[in-house]
Image (cartoon, rainbow, N blue to C red; front, side, top):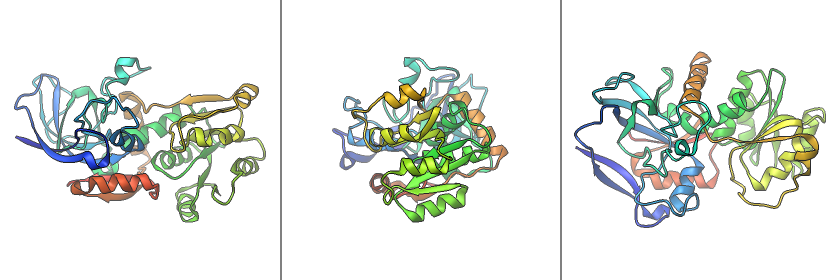
Length: 340
């Protein structure tokens, strides 16, 4: 049985991402599950992995993409959690089941160092999967594993927010819009930034309370202060990294939290640490989450009938174009590739 896949072959770069076939082993290990994948969503990590920036020492060939959605095709002889026909989502770190991860857990991630979900079939351990929320399509559900769970952990587990708290979301990519939705679910006020007035209007329609165009407001940290009665935000969803961190430190309230998630504006910089020290600010790195976190998030999503924001769907043959589109930053929400 043949498995159509996309691989990074030979060396890094979108031009070296090739469609090919691999064999699907006819037998499964006792605890293995074969999943017929139907969709994946693209994360900036996937783009960095493809071009070789994320891990220049990553062994090739590699099937990229950490997120996926699909249907159970077959199960091993000792699998009890799943049966053929179940709709499932692979977890990002296949060995991170619960609690605080160790280094072995963090090396079990899909889309590098292990093969990812840009394939028509994938094999996973039975604990490496969670159930798909029943009200979502596979295209929608394929966005949850990384961006959704990262935002959920930043807001719910690390954010320390409560009804009436102020949350600042930087940009209108997948993580920030998920954070907006989870924060509103918890009764928080949300401020969101973008360089596009059109995107800000769409964020307002999703529930954002205040919007800031950072292209026209260079000192946007002052606007954050104004919108919070000069107190500062309780939680900042920091996806810019080094390029925006200094302004985030000037936007957060004393003893507030900066959830450091992305490096879209750079990963290295000289920063003054005085604001963190003098105001007791907590900087919390967020590395997606465990299987248990994923299950808790999905229960919340299902209970609230929450829908992920999907910007654009590309077909199986359009993977290079999808990655190039992601890189432009024009998207509002998630970019998805679907082959069914």
